Image (cartoon, rainbow, N blue to C red; front, side):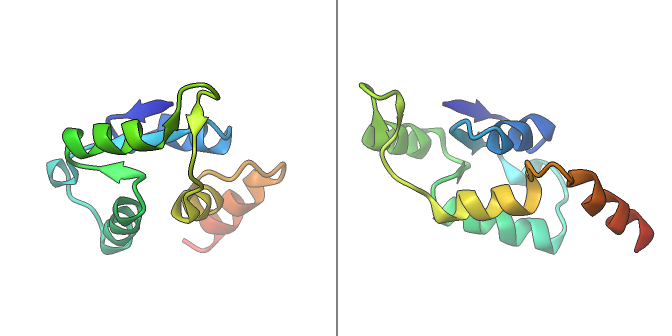
Length: 103
């Protein structure tokens, strides 16, 4: 389990690699656009993003299988976030090219 303290590239990389990841961060530290705020709210409702360390610890203790060293629950929002922001596709660069061309 990797617990990230910011929404930087390491979060996206661990998610793309399929490594169980959580975000423990205070989103009020920076200005966020509306789309990212909605995504964080979704991740928070689905126990991927936490702004309270005690709640994060409770979730980990309740959902972490110590024998298998993995989460015991599947989180749909995690998969959505992975597909949208942490694509592991071989042709990932095509999405970037398309995004740049639309600017």
